[in-house]
Image 1 (cartoon, rainbow, N blue to C red):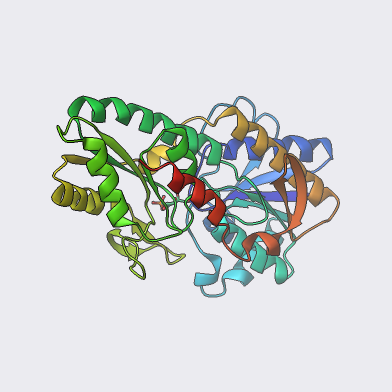
Image 2: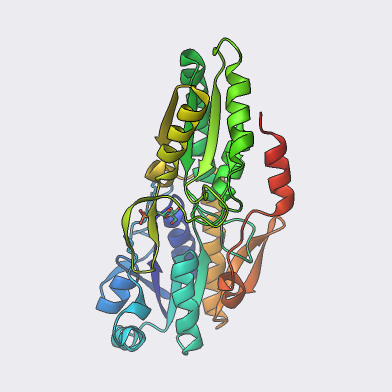
Length: 343
Ligand code: F6P
């Protein structure tokens, strides 16, 4: 069989390990692999590179994706699905492996329903894909965010300031929940519920103390709404091909409110794409290798419309439909714990 693999959507550390796992296992099983450049763009344009054991050698500590990525949406392009089918036929590719998050796997799932032989691999630093406990990139990202918060403690303490740190996560607060707790943040604000402003201001004031010598660290998800029913705070106007807005504005808005209403000097740090860069953690490397490995085995068995998933410490095979049906958000019980840690 000839397998085509693509990485789509935002990049993340660990993608190369998934490609490597897929290529090595596919090779053992007697299949050839080609890589599509730049996500769905490469599939539509038939832009490929050969992928054998030699090509994936020595990439174990390299972040990003050796294939490149894009946010191209097949279903936003005239005759997109037909173009995909033609391209696969022309290149003699008989199975497609898509490594991606909700958008890329959403497209993959729709194509699979249209008869394209497709297998998925779950990745996203946001960890918001359903049907899997963890996605590729998440572990590295929480470690980067935790280290950043650790560093903010010392500068905030020295200056007796409040530091607001904006962490990635559009609709799900997993990154902020994990790194906020790990980094000992004094308030953790998630997209799952509106900010409790009165309590937040109380925390900042109480921690500053009567002499103003205390400090506080506020960890906020980029997608956290300021008020009930209010939209997310944008960095600027403009949508990507999947209709996503550009976030990152919440940190500045929140810092202004805190400073004005508490009198505590406040600064903002937007971690942004630092959370998606650099080498993957050991956990991400292993998880990604397993996902790639099992994706090759799914193709080999002709089990399409599925993906490997991390569940309760083991790898299970799930339907793509299960993964893309809804977003996995932080549950009420976890929120109770993170709110309990405020102060
Ligand atoms: O892929 C998920 C994500 O990292 C989000 O957390 C973030 O909002 C978004 O991507 C940023 O996208 P871009 O790389 O297109 O700016």
